[in-house]
Image 1 (cartoon, helix red, strand yellow):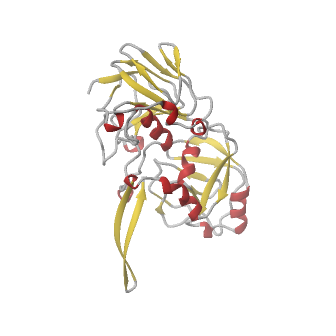
Image 2 (image 1 turned 180 degrees about the vertical axis):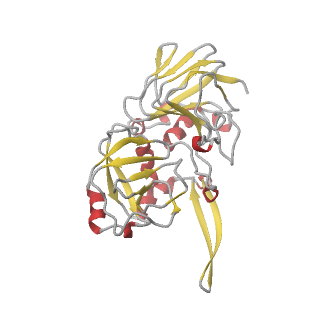
Length: 336
């Protein structure tokens, strides 16, 4: 396909992301994918793409590009100025660009990550079934790296979802537009475990009653927080095990780290809780200095918002388990 954009200035970090690669953590490959998944889905919906089509994830905005061919674009996520030839374009609505136009996406006033969807999706090779860029592994996107000056962004063929775009206002609610960034303190709902039994009762009470601050040590791998120390029962080292999405890992200094899409697949610090899926997009938009609190919810409460997730968005796996003399057939439905 023809190139749509030529990158003049890529911003601090702009990568190609879709909804990530599923099923490869056992080989040491993290899922990656958009950190604010709902914003990517909505950007794609606005331009008529399938919801998981590859788009651009801009960390702190700052992108400038020359338009090479006619295209339909949409920006979502952290609120930020968008200019085409110096004229403002709205977020959360699609807009058209023509050859020789200049597209500029500024720095967000609140939040961190902006998503740019191109009708047809960003056309890059799939690696392990995904276009997502995993920079630490030099995998996916454009040569496994953030965009550079001179990179050409190609669009794919619009799918059937692009046949009837419909009015923008029917697709994005006012609440969703105001969702990205700006809340402080940010309330993150968590399910306790899998190793909350490795913390003192006062450590758990501290975790659930204290306010933490997002530090500058935050990236696609995780967000390190600072605040009252969470006390372990008898040390911070465990035998390394898998790290689920949104896990709140507590190393020896007692300062929690929320693990995100590019997290390592195993780790040797106990995980006191996991941020529920519905709230992981919110922590992905938190910036240094933002305040965070944790709220304990039951597993049933955490799963309730998932009732609306289409089964087409799930991967089913079958396992045979043997415990002692008994065997079990287990089916696991994994939501992307």
